[in-house]
Amino acid sequence: MVTPRTLRLIAPSGYCHNQDAAQRAVSRLQAAGHHLDNLSAITRRFQRFAGDDAQRLNDINALATLEALPDIVLAVRGGYGASRLLDKIDYVGLQRRLLNQPVALCGHSDFTALQLALLAQIGLITFSGPMLAGNFGAEALSDFTESHFWQTLTSPTVNLSWRSTSPDHGRWQGTLWGGNLAMICSLIGTPWMPQIEGGILVIEDVNEHPFRIERMLIQLQQSGILSRQQAIITGSFTSTSLSAYDNGFDFATVWQRIRDEFQIPVISDLAFGHDADTVTLPLGASATLQIENGEAQFAFTGHPTLR
Image 1 (tube, rainbow, N blue to C red):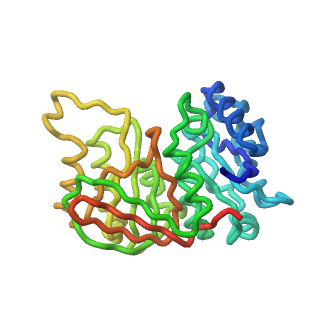
Image 2 (cartoon, rainbow, N blue to C red; image 1 turned 135 degrees about the vertical axis):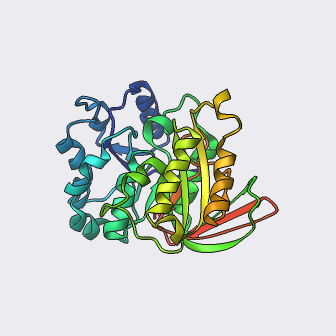
């Protein structure tokens, strides 16, 4: 039985084109006893965005002045738009109000840009995980996604295990960070990129061919970021099609080249990203990763937990 929580919706990115899914999510969460605030973010629209820049920015900056904090700040959906807001965010106010508080900011995809900016600027740990429309509003809600979401938000230490096709073996400790790979790369050379030393980088993406994923990883290496990490964990890379032209060039090929060329372990097959089944990961938490004979284990701690 999940304790009823207060969720505040924010929409810093794209317009929620699947209104039925969003309303289905609202009904589900309310039926479970949760209270939802800022519902107007669901229907708000300007061009392809969930409101104009000022409205979407206010979703974020208003968190700095709320009299009572919600338990969870949940992104309605991803898309595009968070990058336009990063230089206008009230980082000082958000640090004063949110740091070391039992509140969880959760989302993924385009939301990664905001999450990494908050980590870089004020050290705020947020959660890469499900969103309102695409996950909680799915026609069939994933039990895996839902149970792991609540487990991560309420447990001070979380342990994951999965089978990986990675040939690597070893044990690594470091800061867990990452999210959507395209959004990570969009922050290279900006103040919004966290300077993580000895980290464990978790990546996922959607609608990106293996050659584009390899190109982005090369960019991370050539900018000096990848070489400072201990290991990469790959999640789901969905909605892409290979052709005869690829002639065997697939994601497994990319992961092996990264191992060989850059001498960094790549632990694959974590259920994380745009698939229906996804774990929830606290970006900025302390993590331990180990793998032996294809059995991967991942533990993280130090993230905010709900009371």
